[in-house]
Image (cartoon, rainbow, N blue to C red):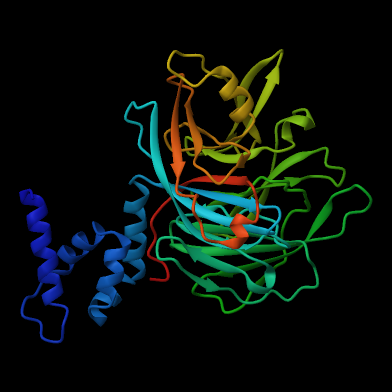
Length: 408
């Protein structure tokens, strides 16, 4: 054990002895905070039980926010959502993203979290600063994979079935807000209008607040989850009911103001299943395409929301010695680009996964390199609903999942 580790262990031992009713040593609060910031969530959960003072300190709003900021700078996880066709369930797993150390092949362990019905709710539960919002309107929940605890939100009183929900985070005030909307019935093959919008601030609101002022837009989300970037929530929308005018809605979580952002003019076939992502800190959407048997990834980045300005980059698939075969990349993965991570790598995964390990590819267009991560841990699950399906469809892969102390 090195000198630094020995000193840290001594500090922790001292903390344990001072947590009782008789305090023999006075440790400055800033020292305790620095020690606590370096501890994993499981250790902090134990310290919550040591004393009321420690519980109050760890659950303090400012400390929770500080801990989240530090966690966001550390290696983060992917959140996988699997769909079981026979079971009618969504299954949630997380897996730590291995850092790029120049290895072409590495492995990671998937951790199972929960399952829930995927009908009638419509979104695909992205992780927002470590929290996941999921479930039907009668039992909408916010779950923290780090603490494995959740809270149930107030029931939404509505006769509608098509209810969409989104989770946003305000990094300035540290507030989480859940946005719910109901979708009107489509007429013929047209798309339904967003009718009612409700909002709830976690830990502050006891009931849903109705939003009266929002732009007219139509809904057809397919399988593109929403995303929250720097305090702004984005989701896919349509400007007219025939679906021929693509747009993206932005919702400022702090000011609670909406704006419509026109999408670039592209053939509709390109926008059938765009994946919203964050690329170099900006809203982007990504999809794969094939032209003259040449496969590529097309990335559109929002440069200016006020002027609806988008930039486009196209990346051809790499052909490099030591990489997976071209056939392997093209046909098994290249049509399934899910997102981009903080390192600027595109995350590719198969459409369907059997009960064994599966591969996730990280494609770095700047280095023209693909690295492969073998995801293990989804086998041997003693769950009859999981085992009911011979394979499971991956419906979302969300990067940037950070450790969070909410609900500890």
